Image (cartoon, rainbow, N blue to C red):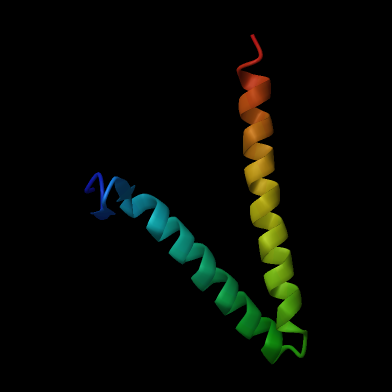
Length: 70
């Protein structure tokens, strides 16, 4: 995989981060469409997705802190 997809000045954009973000957005969009077909408010899907992403980031950071405690 290329170490950078493109760069603007001193900013590099790695392809892994871009694909991960794109996958999250597409996954949440599909989830919202499926919930809409079931008659559930798609806004709840987006709220749940954002909360899950924030919880995953916080949990990963907590794991790193606990793992590197010593």
